[in-house]
Length: 287
Length: 276
Image (cartoon, rainbow over all chains, first blue to last red; front, side, top):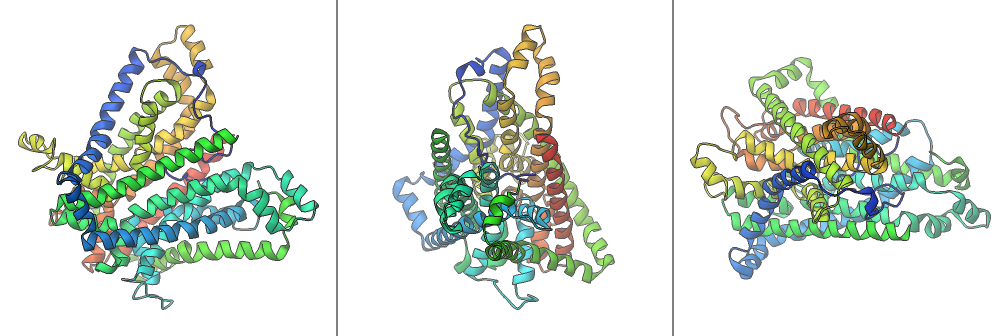
């Protein structure tokens, strides 16, 4: 059993280098049927995804560049973007380290309960985000049985983001580690390299693209997270992340203000996608 | 899967400490909170559990979640298979754009998804929503919008499972069938479908889990219609009960947790089947 739930959007989590473009003899020209299928597909995607997202960008720039800039630099918007960015970067960094460590333990270590650990790691992917928020609030809220209260704190926001982004790096690194040859590591170890040196010089370079991909996905998820933030943030300004700010502006019928911050979040998603694409191509070329 | 040869090179002490860190971290972040909520529900007793999940409001919420999930799964399965076949088998201009657009839909914030749909399908100012509203069809603040939002956020799940399987399989079999005179429908039913069966099942389970759990995007397009709870799904019900300090949020959450765990276990059972 390898990855149970793939990271959404983790296009190439497998170690085998994916061909970026397949040789032409294995793909077909569009015929009448497939052409029709493409037409319907593109129409549906336009109606569902493309036109709505274009509407967000159009709305945000309706007041020109200055209008957009003004909406984004309003104290509430700016503060939420700063909080979201700082927390997302911090969470991504922790995930890069902990995700790699957990993946290593899952692949290279064997102990009773390993399969259970596999299942638990996937729970944040499958759990409704509002439930995730509630579950965290029960253990780390005002009625905490362990006496830790994270309600209405930035630490609470940070912790909830750690919960929802936990599986990303684990699930991108794990398959690479499974497919990795152990010969080089054995050679290094037999030549007297310490485990740390072996990891740093041999294992880490191979894992790096997967770690970067997983971390980028975790970062994108953290930047846009809403459901799990709602309860733990407790509705105060200091802990309001960007998606909550956008929601609040929608409630106040300030669609231009909502669209401006939404456009920033959209751009972040695009940058992450491009990063993933670059990493994938680089990995494929390296072979 | 485990490599004892390498593992043994790492000293026992560091191996145990790495294992302890991994288990400790996962426990503190995920496992303990789940244990505590289960314990709280058990503590409150079976009668409260039954009341919380069987009240009229709860029944209606579960029913709406089920309707939306079925609709989103049907849409994304049909569409997902069609897109996967196009991406894996054919070459056409704009192929990378199409692929990127599908990936984008899952990395966008759910609130942004909701806003995007409101801007286009909203009844008063929406680009398409206004004419639709005037002709008597509401998308936003109604079930169709909630289905669109759910289909949006779970869009790539089927596609991304099916594409690699189709790519690995190649097109030799299909070309042979075509040469032998099989129609497109026959080729799909006899060759493509058996090939992608498990990947498709896997994608569908993921789509179900994601659809049941969707919250932010659905919250925006549902418009918080109170009273009869006309547009309240199970996740929105949890939100309302917590915010209004009404009882029963833990119980509904536990049901949703159980569904999530079942989905993961089902998926882990499908996986080896697929690779064998």
